[in-house]
Image (cartoon, rainbow, N blue to C red; front, side, top):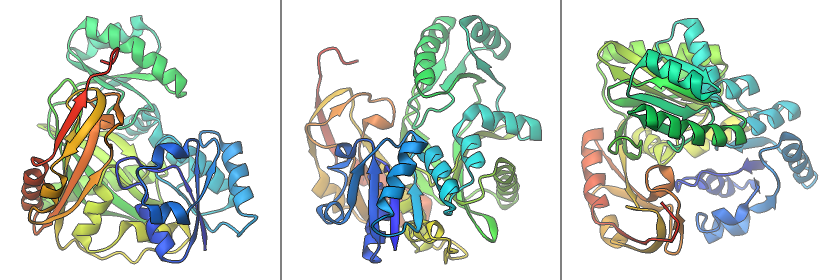
Length: 411
């Protein structure tokens, strides 16, 4: 069996799928525009087993050519793509090669937040007030309509890196200029949105030949505003049964309308005093260690499910979760160069801790400490309930200390 994996998550879980595939005896070709960036994130065993090739992964013709070249050694049976930057191109390549993957239209609808919001708006799915803006004048007009504070975001951003809370018109002007430049480089646009208050959750789903099913809900502990740093996750959290069914039905219906009808998906929403408001849809397994948490909860393996789906098989997934998992993240406190990461051995010794994963290493440069790029380590714990798992993970994470030296000209 020959699988092609296109790019990988840098949250510490990026090569879990490759490792499982290799253990199953598969040949795995890894395609990346910059394989060097992953060298510290994969074990020596995985590195030595992968056929690593460099190619553009943000360009479908180049990606398709690389896949076809790899298939001359052994026919490719499946594609695996889990990163936002490449997933549209993977979908297009899979469609061309008639390999299983999420439909291209569904991936595009989810990856482009303006498309997601338009579909929600047309079908009556509750979302914050929004507008696509191209000029500063349009932005200020919409801000006046929605009021302050408001949210500005890039339509193709990921990991909170292009989400800004603006509390003044000056904030809006400054952020719009930056986001417009970044969005245009990515082929996207800038959105202005009504700021919605309430806790954020996500609905995790799995789609196969039987349809779309809800696996459960994840809570998210965010850092202090105005940033949207994600400090912790726990799965599955309990939401009252009637409300959980209403949310699950809404999410599954929306995924069907959008065309996100394959594999794992990750839909974020806020619970407001007036009910659920959809924030975004991701046509993939949630990032960070969420796949690990789902595996712990179901006593199953999300990587095995992803491999089964990639080869056209139906995953043998359990009916109900029997435990819970939580992740607490450790961040650099400021941009700069990581000098040391201490306390890892102690953190691993805490009760119920199943893993401590490094996503940054001594000598690495931290560009931003206010989004996913500042994450240095993730502590994962498992227990009978998400509350207990969260407390165990949080206690262990407190043992880890990160020292950063400031670099000139870095903010």
